[in-house]
Length: 115
Image (cartoon, rainbow, N blue to C red; front, side, top):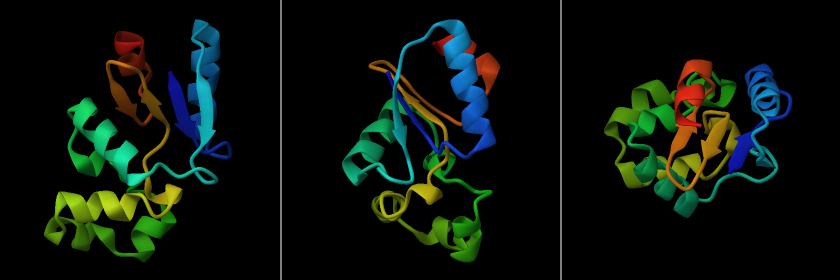
């Protein structure tokens, strides 16, 4: 299982503690230093069954600076995935990737059900 996170993010820290407490093993990847590639994001998006907007860090500074709230609706999926792949700070975190599912953000009840 892949755990994609930003180590300074408190939500990511809570998620890591939860994974550790459950005894779930994972490979950790820092989203800031190793941003997901477009191919990975495309695969994760399709595997997740989630709307693409759920992959954007809508509360992040970069999202706000780029005024993506207004721009995303006019962008194609391809353009959105390309944009996400340019900077890890645009991507919602943490992300869990297993062979069966992809989860974005940390919701303990959802993680407990799916992991």
